[in-house]
Amino acid sequence: MGKRTQENVYNKSRGRKMDDNRVQERASTGIARLDEMMDGGPFRGSVTLVLGPPGTGKTCLGLEFISRGAIDYGEPGLIITFEHFPKKLLRDALSLGFDLQDLESKGLVRILFTSPEIFFEQAQVSGGLLDTMVQELGAKRVLVDSISHLERLARDPVKLREIAFTFTNALLRHGLTAFVTQEDPGITGDMAAAQYGISYLVDAVIVLRYVELDSSITRAVMVLKQRASSHDKTIREFWITDEGIRIGEPFKDREGVLSGLPRKKEIDAFMEVFGPRGKSGGKGEGR
Ligand SMILES: Nc1ncnc2c1ncn2[C@@H]1O[C@H](COP(=O)(O)OP(=O)(O)OP(=O)(O)O)[C@@H](O)[C@H]1O
Ligand SMILES: [Mg+2]
Image: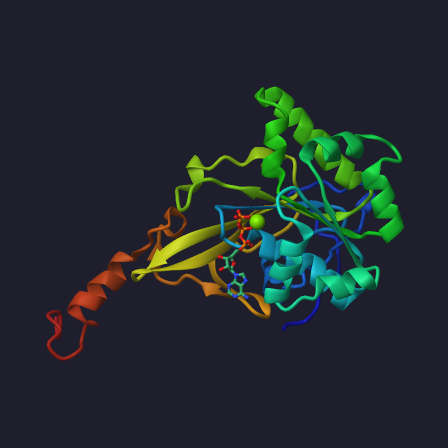
Protein backbone atom coordinates (compact mmCIF):
# COMPACT_ATOMS: atom_id res chain seq x y z
CA MET A 1 0.00 0.00 0.00
CA GLY A 2 1.28 3.45 -0.88
CA LYS A 3 2.06 6.36 1.35
CA ARG A 4 -0.75 7.32 3.69
CA THR A 5 -2.13 10.73 3.03
CA GLN A 6 -4.41 11.20 5.99
CA GLU A 7 -2.56 13.97 7.78
CA ASN A 8 -1.50 15.71 4.63
CA VAL A 9 -2.62 19.25 4.62
CA TYR A 10 -3.63 20.97 1.46
CA ASN A 11 -4.41 24.53 0.68
CA LYS A 12 -5.41 24.38 -2.90
CA SER A 13 -7.74 27.09 -3.96
CA ARG A 14 -8.29 25.74 -7.46
CA GLY A 15 -11.93 25.72 -8.35
CA ARG A 16 -13.19 27.09 -5.03
CA LYS A 17 -12.64 30.35 -3.30
CA MET A 18 -11.35 29.64 0.18
CA ASP A 19 -12.37 32.11 2.81
CA ASP A 20 -9.53 33.47 4.95
CA ASN A 21 -7.08 31.12 3.28
CA ARG A 22 -8.58 28.29 5.21
CA VAL A 23 -6.44 25.20 5.27
CA GLN A 24 -8.49 22.15 4.49
CA GLU A 25 -7.32 18.84 5.69
CA ARG A 26 -7.82 15.59 3.85
CA ALA A 27 -8.92 12.30 5.30
CA SER A 28 -7.81 8.99 3.82
CA THR A 29 -10.28 6.62 2.21
CA GLY A 30 -7.95 3.84 3.38
CA ILE A 31 -7.35 2.87 -0.25
CA ALA A 32 -4.10 4.51 -1.27
CA ARG A 33 -4.86 4.64 -4.97
CA LEU A 34 -8.30 6.08 -4.40
CA ASP A 35 -6.70 8.79 -2.27
CA GLU A 36 -4.37 9.56 -5.15
CA MET A 37 -7.32 9.68 -7.54
CA MET A 38 -8.98 12.15 -5.13
CA ASP A 39 -5.96 14.45 -5.11
CA GLY A 40 -5.02 13.32 -1.59
CA GLY A 41 -8.36 12.02 -0.34
CA PRO A 42 -11.75 13.42 0.58
CA PHE A 43 -11.80 16.65 2.58
CA ARG A 44 -12.53 16.19 6.24
CA GLY A 45 -16.08 17.13 7.03
CA SER A 46 -17.24 16.58 3.45
CA VAL A 47 -19.71 14.25 1.80
CA THR A 48 -18.65 11.85 -0.95
CA LEU A 49 -21.31 10.14 -3.03
CA VAL A 50 -20.58 6.61 -4.26
CA LEU A 51 -22.81 5.97 -7.24
CA GLY A 52 -23.22 2.70 -9.12
CA PRO A 53 -25.53 -0.05 -10.32
CA PRO A 54 -26.39 -2.99 -8.01
CA GLY A 55 -23.47 -5.21 -7.09
CA THR A 56 -20.72 -2.93 -8.37
CA GLY A 57 -19.17 -2.62 -4.90
CA LYS A 58 -20.67 0.50 -3.28
CA THR A 59 -21.19 -1.18 0.09
CA CYS A 60 -17.75 -2.82 -0.06
CA LEU A 61 -16.11 0.55 -0.73
CA GLY A 62 -18.01 2.14 2.15
CA LEU A 63 -17.16 -0.71 4.53
CA GLU A 64 -13.48 -0.37 3.67
CA PHE A 65 -13.61 3.40 4.26
CA ILE A 66 -15.04 2.83 7.74
CA SER A 67 -12.90 -0.20 8.64
CA ARG A 68 -9.59 1.25 7.51
CA GLY A 69 -10.45 4.56 9.17
CA ALA A 70 -10.87 2.67 12.45
CA ILE A 71 -7.94 0.26 12.08
CA ASP A 72 -5.32 2.48 10.45
CA TYR A 73 -6.24 5.85 11.92
CA GLY A 74 -8.20 5.10 15.08
CA GLU A 75 -11.13 7.11 13.73
CA PRO A 76 -14.48 5.83 15.00
CA GLY A 77 -17.02 5.28 12.24
CA LEU A 78 -20.78 5.04 12.23
CA ILE A 79 -22.54 2.85 9.67
CA ILE A 80 -26.14 3.75 8.96
CA THR A 81 -27.87 1.16 6.86
CA PHE A 82 -31.40 1.10 5.54
CA GLU A 83 -31.13 -2.17 3.72
CA HIS A 84 -28.83 -4.70 5.32
CA PHE A 85 -29.22 -6.40 8.65
CA PRO A 86 -26.09 -5.80 10.72
CA LYS A 87 -25.31 -9.55 10.45
CA LYS A 88 -25.08 -9.29 6.69
CA LEU A 89 -22.81 -6.25 6.91
CA LEU A 90 -20.56 -8.09 9.36
CA ARG A 91 -20.36 -10.99 6.93
CA ASP A 92 -19.69 -8.74 3.92
CA ALA A 93 -16.95 -6.90 5.80
CA LEU A 94 -15.39 -10.18 6.88
CA SER A 95 -15.20 -11.32 3.26
CA LEU A 96 -13.11 -8.20 2.61
CA GLY A 97 -10.84 -8.97 5.56
CA PHE A 98 -12.39 -6.60 8.12
CA ASP A 99 -13.70 -7.79 11.47
CA LEU A 100 -16.39 -5.21 12.22
CA GLN A 101 -17.54 -7.11 15.27
CA ASP A 102 -14.09 -6.75 16.80
CA LEU A 103 -14.06 -3.05 15.89
CA GLU A 104 -17.50 -2.67 17.45
CA SER A 105 -16.32 -4.26 20.67
CA LYS A 106 -13.41 -1.82 20.75
CA GLY A 107 -15.80 1.11 20.42
CA LEU A 108 -14.49 2.03 16.97
CA VAL A 109 -17.53 1.13 14.89
CA ARG A 110 -21.25 1.20 15.42
CA ILE A 111 -23.96 -0.03 13.10
CA LEU A 112 -27.38 1.58 13.04
CA PHE A 113 -30.00 -0.37 11.12
CA THR A 114 -33.05 1.82 10.79
CA SER A 115 -35.69 3.08 8.40
CA PRO A 116 -35.24 6.19 6.27
CA GLU A 117 -38.32 7.70 7.93
CA ILE A 118 -36.93 7.39 11.45
CA PHE A 119 -33.44 8.39 10.47
CA PHE A 120 -34.59 11.48 8.59
CA GLU A 121 -36.85 12.58 11.41
CA GLN A 122 -34.14 12.02 14.02
CA ALA A 123 -31.40 13.67 11.96
CA GLN A 124 -33.26 16.97 12.13
CA VAL A 125 -33.75 16.93 15.86
CA SER A 126 -31.08 18.40 18.06
CA GLY A 127 -30.16 15.68 20.55
CA GLY A 128 -31.82 13.07 18.31
CA LEU A 129 -30.56 9.62 17.39
CA LEU A 130 -27.83 10.86 15.03
CA ASP A 131 -26.48 13.41 17.51
CA THR A 132 -26.49 10.87 20.33
CA MET A 133 -24.75 8.14 18.37
CA VAL A 134 -22.11 10.48 16.94
CA GLN A 135 -21.36 11.84 20.40
CA GLU A 136 -21.33 8.48 22.14
CA LEU A 137 -18.98 6.97 19.58
CA GLY A 138 -16.93 10.11 19.02
CA ALA A 139 -17.53 9.42 15.34
CA LYS A 140 -15.26 10.97 12.75
CA ARG A 141 -16.62 9.02 9.79
CA VAL A 142 -20.01 7.92 8.65
CA LEU A 143 -21.28 5.61 5.94
CA VAL A 144 -24.90 5.87 4.83
CA ASP A 145 -25.96 2.86 2.76
CA SER A 146 -27.93 3.75 0.76
CA ILE A 147 -29.60 7.07 0.28
CA SER A 148 -31.66 5.64 -2.57
CA HIS A 149 -34.07 4.71 0.21
CA LEU A 150 -34.69 8.36 0.99
CA GLU A 151 -36.54 8.51 -2.30
CA ARG A 152 -39.47 6.78 -0.72
CA LEU A 153 -39.99 9.73 1.63
CA ALA A 154 -41.46 11.90 -1.13
CA ARG A 155 -42.50 11.84 -4.74
CA ASP A 156 -42.29 15.50 -5.53
CA PRO A 157 -38.80 16.31 -6.94
CA VAL A 158 -38.68 19.64 -5.12
CA LYS A 159 -39.50 17.98 -1.82
CA LEU A 160 -36.88 15.31 -2.54
CA ARG A 161 -34.25 17.97 -3.05
CA GLU A 162 -35.18 19.54 0.25
CA ILE A 163 -34.83 16.17 1.93
CA ALA A 164 -31.43 15.63 0.32
CA PHE A 165 -30.33 19.09 1.45
CA THR A 166 -31.48 18.57 5.04
CA PHE A 167 -29.92 15.13 5.12
CA THR A 168 -26.53 16.34 3.82
CA ASN A 169 -26.50 19.21 6.28
CA ALA A 170 -27.26 16.86 9.16
CA LEU A 171 -24.08 14.91 8.32
CA LEU A 172 -22.02 18.05 7.87
CA ARG A 173 -23.26 19.56 11.13
CA HIS A 174 -21.06 17.10 13.00
CA GLY A 175 -18.01 17.65 10.83
CA LEU A 176 -18.14 14.00 9.80
CA THR A 177 -16.30 12.74 6.77
CA ALA A 178 -19.13 10.96 5.04
CA PHE A 179 -19.54 8.36 2.32
CA VAL A 180 -23.07 7.90 1.07
CA THR A 181 -24.02 5.32 -1.51
CA GLN A 182 -26.70 5.65 -4.14
CA GLU A 183 -27.97 3.12 -6.58
CA ASP A 184 -27.70 4.00 -10.19
CA PRO A 185 -30.15 1.84 -12.11
CA GLY A 186 -28.25 1.35 -15.37
CA ILE A 187 -26.20 -1.87 -15.34
CA THR A 188 -23.92 -0.27 -17.83
CA GLY A 189 -24.76 2.89 -19.62
CA ASP A 190 -24.08 6.34 -20.79
CA MET A 191 -23.00 8.82 -18.14
CA ALA A 192 -25.15 11.50 -19.65
CA ALA A 193 -28.22 9.39 -19.08
CA ALA A 194 -27.46 8.77 -15.41
CA GLN A 195 -29.36 10.56 -12.71
CA TYR A 196 -27.15 11.89 -9.98
CA GLY A 197 -29.71 12.69 -7.33
CA ILE A 198 -27.88 14.62 -4.68
CA SER A 199 -24.63 14.93 -6.62
CA TYR A 200 -24.99 18.70 -6.82
CA LEU A 201 -24.93 18.93 -3.01
CA VAL A 202 -21.91 16.78 -2.32
CA ASP A 203 -18.19 17.55 -2.52
CA ALA A 204 -17.12 14.49 -4.43
CA VAL A 205 -18.70 11.84 -6.62
CA ILE A 206 -17.17 8.41 -7.20
CA VAL A 207 -18.77 6.37 -9.96
CA LEU A 208 -18.60 2.58 -10.17
CA ARG A 209 -19.49 0.74 -13.36
CA TYR A 210 -19.55 -2.68 -14.95
CA VAL A 211 -17.51 -2.91 -18.09
CA GLU A 212 -17.57 -5.67 -20.69
CA LEU A 213 -14.05 -6.29 -21.80
CA ASP A 214 -13.04 -9.00 -24.24
CA SER A 215 -16.15 -11.02 -23.44
CA SER A 216 -15.91 -10.79 -19.66
CA ILE A 217 -17.28 -8.38 -17.10
CA THR A 218 -14.98 -6.27 -15.00
CA ARG A 219 -15.48 -3.23 -12.78
CA ALA A 220 -14.47 0.37 -13.37
CA VAL A 221 -14.07 3.32 -10.99
CA MET A 222 -13.71 7.01 -11.64
CA VAL A 223 -13.83 10.24 -9.67
CA LEU A 224 -16.49 12.17 -11.51
CA LYS A 225 -16.18 15.32 -9.48
CA GLN A 226 -14.30 16.69 -6.52
CA ARG A 227 -14.45 20.27 -5.43
CA ALA A 228 -11.27 22.30 -5.05
CA SER A 229 -9.15 19.44 -6.27
CA SER A 230 -7.23 18.36 -9.28
CA HIS A 231 -8.69 14.88 -9.25
CA ASP A 232 -7.80 12.00 -11.52
CA LYS A 233 -9.81 12.07 -14.73
CA THR A 234 -8.99 8.53 -15.80
CA ILE A 235 -11.24 5.51 -15.56
CA ARG A 236 -9.57 2.61 -13.79
CA GLU A 237 -10.25 -1.06 -13.41
CA PHE A 238 -10.81 -2.33 -9.89
CA TRP A 239 -11.25 -5.66 -8.12
CA ILE A 240 -13.00 -6.68 -4.94
CA THR A 241 -10.76 -9.13 -3.07
CA ASP A 242 -10.55 -10.78 0.32
CA GLU A 243 -8.13 -8.01 1.26
CA GLY A 244 -10.43 -5.21 0.21
CA ILE A 245 -10.64 -3.14 -2.94
CA ARG A 246 -7.71 -3.02 -5.35
CA ILE A 247 -7.56 -0.34 -7.99
CA GLY A 248 -5.48 -0.87 -11.12
CA GLU A 249 -4.26 1.21 -13.99
CA PRO A 250 -6.47 3.29 -16.29
CA PHE A 251 -8.14 1.41 -19.12
CA LYS A 252 -5.67 1.78 -21.91
CA ASP A 253 -6.37 2.14 -25.59
CA ARG A 254 -10.11 1.93 -25.03
CA GLU A 255 -12.85 4.30 -25.86
CA GLY A 256 -16.38 4.37 -24.47
CA VAL A 257 -15.51 2.60 -21.19
CA LEU A 258 -18.39 4.34 -19.41
CA SER A 259 -20.83 3.05 -21.98
CA GLY A 260 -20.05 -0.37 -20.54
CA LEU A 261 -18.95 -1.63 -23.94
CA PRO A 262 -15.54 -0.12 -24.63
CA ARG A 263 -14.10 -0.31 -28.10
CA LYS A 264 -10.46 -0.61 -28.88
CA LYS A 265 -9.18 2.64 -30.27
CA GLU A 266 -9.22 2.53 -34.05
CA ILE A 267 -5.47 2.52 -34.31
CA ASP A 268 -5.20 -0.55 -32.05
CA ALA A 269 -7.91 -2.38 -33.90
CA PHE A 270 -5.97 -1.64 -37.08
CA MET A 271 -2.74 -2.88 -35.55
CA GLU A 272 -4.41 -6.05 -34.35
CA VAL A 273 -5.72 -6.88 -37.79
CA PHE A 274 -2.87 -5.69 -39.93
CA GLY A 275 0.11 -5.89 -37.54
CA PRO A 276 2.50 -3.06 -36.74
CA ARG A 277 3.80 -1.06 -39.63
CA GLY A 278 7.19 -2.18 -40.76
CA LYS A 279 6.77 -5.75 -39.48
CA SER A 280 7.38 -8.43 -42.02
CA GLY A 281 4.51 -8.58 -44.38
CA GLY A 282 3.30 -5.13 -43.32
CA LYS A 283 1.66 -3.54 -46.29
CA GLY A 284 3.10 -0.10 -45.63
CA GLU A 285 6.68 -1.32 -45.42
CA GLY A 286 9.21 0.85 -47.19
CA ARG A 287 6.70 3.46 -48.26
N1 LIG B 1 -14.00 -11.05 -0.91
C1 LIG B 1 -14.57 -10.85 -2.09
N2 LIG B 1 -13.94 -11.26 -3.21
C2 LIG B 1 -14.50 -11.08 -4.40
N3 LIG B 1 -15.66 -10.47 -4.61
C3 LIG B 1 -16.33 -10.04 -3.54
C4 LIG B 1 -15.81 -10.21 -2.24
N4 LIG B 1 -16.70 -9.67 -1.36
C5 LIG B 1 -17.71 -9.21 -2.11
N5 LIG B 1 -17.50 -9.43 -3.41
C6 LIG B 1 -18.36 -9.05 -4.53
O1 LIG B 1 -18.85 -7.78 -4.31
C7 LIG B 1 -20.16 -7.72 -4.87
C8 LIG B 1 -21.12 -6.97 -3.96
O2 LIG B 1 -20.64 -5.71 -3.77
P1 LIG B 1 -21.54 -4.69 -2.94
O3 LIG B 1 -22.52 -5.36 -2.05
O4 LIG B 1 -20.59 -3.74 -2.34
O5 LIG B 1 -22.31 -4.02 -4.14
P2 LIG B 1 -23.34 -2.82 -4.07
O6 LIG B 1 -22.94 -1.90 -5.17
O7 LIG B 1 -23.40 -2.28 -2.71
O8 LIG B 1 -24.68 -3.55 -4.47
P3 LIG B 1 -26.19 -3.15 -4.08
O9 LIG B 1 -26.58 -2.00 -4.96
O10 LIG B 1 -26.93 -4.38 -4.41
O11 LIG B 1 -26.22 -2.82 -2.63
C9 LIG B 1 -20.67 -9.08 -5.03
O12 LIG B 1 -20.96 -9.25 -6.39
C10 LIG B 1 -19.54 -9.95 -4.62
O13 LIG B 1 -19.31 -10.86 -5.65
MG1 LIG C 1 -24.92 -2.20 -1.28
